[in-house]
Image 1 (tube, rainbow, N blue to C red):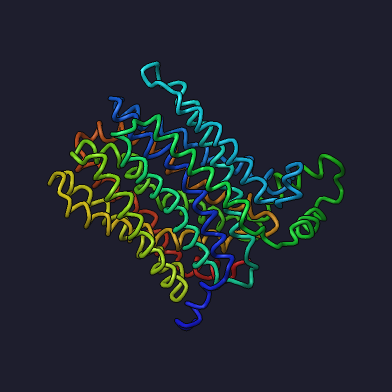
Image 2: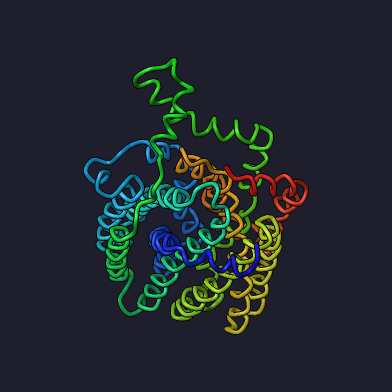
Length: 439
């Protein structure tokens, strides 16, 4: 594909819709991620407890369990008016709005159980929304439109970071003046705007019912509820292993699990690290949120062009190597202290990492996903990456304490990416063929 054709793909209106849905996907991570960590840290909660409270995000690692419902269950009234994907997205957003309003009334001095329960509720709604948002993106393009995979991934990522960074900037720049409870009130306003966006975008045009009926033919001997359960909960997973073969399927799943584990450990402790090193809430807002958002967008567009032109495997290799390098940059900050120029340089490297690795990663997972059960199969693959990011990273606070210094912690997280890079290099030809074949 030449560069002119590569650039032409960005004119498709479906990419704008994917961007808006990406904003909806990224926003909840502000609520249960950086905002929550900043709130708890300012309240004097220990970093071990902050890390454990972040484990509510474990639901992202298991959302494939109920993902078949998003493929097969139609929400009354909303389903017929908005379509399968948007009706689920809107329903989860409305539930999150109720929970965000509830958290504005929470008093941390009374204990962590109530904010923990509310955060778990938001995480569950968000994880369910993510299933529908990912399926929304995948369903927009046919298997023959492979050229749209990196651009779609890029716009989804840019949307995610926009939904995460700009509200995060709004939160941290007002945290000292308003207090965190009032900040969550501002977040409720942002969520209302995202609900409006969901009502504006178009539903994917896909003959999903016909594809699912073809899959159901495999279970013609069963009938009634049993047949529905088999098609809903068994066929999506069976189809993935049947299409790739058990050996390759397991290799893919192990790679997905390992690839972002080091980045996950870093991300869980980043706000705590910034505060302990000596950066203020205002500096966190300006550099990690606002500036971080701008350079992420720039590198994501560059990363999508690279992955479209050269292929996702090269993007994964470059992104993985940069991932280890960016973690080492944080170790330098830990030794040098809160130097603004060093933070800027580190954020440039870190966001380059995010752009190249994530665009390639999302494109690769999408290429492996069938259209009949896109929600379920993508959720299965993405949940493996989330498993390391949410479950194991919950011990990140204990890991810092055990290692005894931030410098050692970031060196260890840099080394975590090496096994997946070795695996990718060994089977890169096989991965490239799978990505090109698609579905």
